[in-house]
Amino acid sequence: AQRVTQPEKLLSVFKGAPVELKCNYSYSGSPELFWYVQYSRQRLQLLLRHISRESIKGFTADLNKGETSFHLKKPFAQEEDSAMYYCALVSGGYQKVTFGTGTKLQVIP
Amino acid sequence: NAGVTQTPKFQVLKTGQSMTLQCAQDMNHNSMYWYRQDPGMGLRLIYYSASEGTTDKGEVPNGYNVSRLNKREFSLRLESAAPSQTSVYFCASSESRVTRAGELFFGEGSRLTVL
Image (tube, rainbow over all chains, first blue to last red; front, side, top):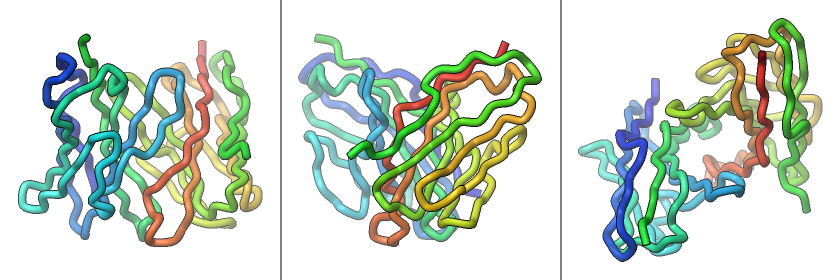
């Protein structure tokens, strides 16, 4: 069965410091991985997907199949990055989406 | 364009009562989902429907039933509510095309308290 692990419940960084939110996965097939973000009082929304290989709001994530990881990175944290971040994996014929437990990012001014 | 709409936004139930959470989407999406969000547990999939007429169990289906009424609507029913079902429930939808798989659009959530 597929599993997504986010080891950190809370990550606190100072403004301007680098950010790395960790995500590891377990899946026997070819993974499709995503990062979702939930800002305060807003809906959960897609941040980026690995297949796009794009940078959104300065965030990037690289799929490392050898380490089964998909860590989210940003070189310089901003206060507006404070939010709940979820890593997700799609399986089940590309219809079943499994989320990790989430990491709360707190950017300290 | 409302996207995904959930009702009610808040509900308090007594143990043993039943209720249905309603979800509707106006994006012509084939796939719809119900998740529950609990502190420290993240988002856990209850049921999903890959297309109209089909439903499948997720990680935590016990105590819940679902109905895909039509392409737009996907309801979640608690037949006999228990305190362990106190949670925030999210409905989501997505296209079924492989290229868009995993791109979910979420509702605002429904906060349910079972006393």
